[in-house]
Image (cartoon, rainbow over all chains, first blue to last red; front, top):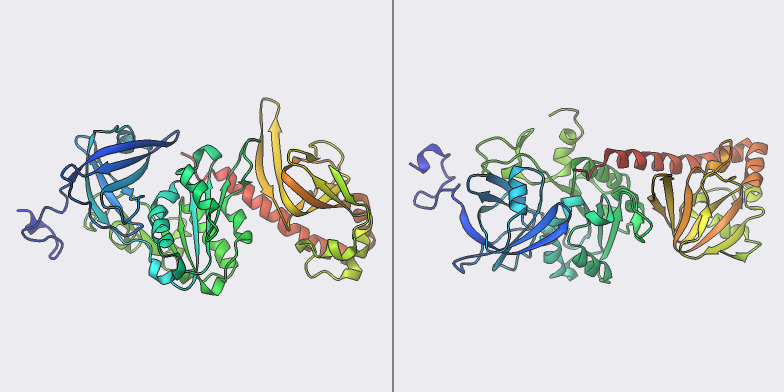
Length: 289
Length: 156
């Protein structure tokens, strides 16, 4: 009954149903900003969580409420914990954000294609995040810092609406202190108690140091931010095909058969969420897709 | 605020990225009366609504550009640092600062005398054109940034 309605090859005949969630228990709940929390999940059976690639996502499930696609924001090497950073922006994410230690949540995944870090080996790596775009890039930072010597310069810019909207703030401060990467933060506007940079993410690009022809860029944030950032990087000589962006759409099945997340010829859940900018550019700049 | 030097060599001024590629002979009248100043964190370089008789080339540090309204705290909308310029209200009547500029951290600037520069640009249209070719991208970039800020891309 399970397999016969699904495309051939999608389902292991004797395996679990692809839409069936596993259970996890909330171990820690950390408030990041006024509307964003980080949930650290543990496995009730002690069985390690599935391996994932930075940039992939899980479907988090609450019975009676629904399911939402949330990027994984923890260290890929830590299979004892599953970490998700969630902004309360709707019915499901509101409920997820309210989960306290001990609560049970369902998950399935990981899904999609992540950041192609191997393409950056031997090159300068540019990472630009806006708002809640940092959590999907956080696993990538863990990964690249564990093999830092394989990359050239690493330039990171993280922008948010205000100082109070910067997530993973204490870790960001640690990364800013590192001498082997350059991590800049900027906010759209601030009061006088903020001594950092002010301006949209693109204002930091002229100050970034990299060899444009030998760079790879990973962008994650609101679509308008990624479009303008890609355009600014291109103006500095970074080729379109060397830029990847992480897309967000309304995902339902997460395995490429329901079509809810279709964007042009791609299903974001299956072909993305990380996609090459050169392929995506015409769609991103189209008035309507 | 401390004046570091009352006489700034032309070469010092022209090494600033704003003047990149400009013929030093052409630029000579602009840099007359230039002084170098050091501002401590928190000190005001320019006060909104006051006569704009000078503008600044930033060599070190960070300057916050602030806007405000009577009923709310002042808001920093952009910071500018090394290689950037603060102020163009001196070129447009009524020559009054349209925002406040405050040093966010210790900041070293070269200050150009606005009436001197205006006179030089007026006297030599070739110089005026070269100068505006450098100033306009600064204005355009800040306008575009302001528009992106208006979009509130990180908003909820």
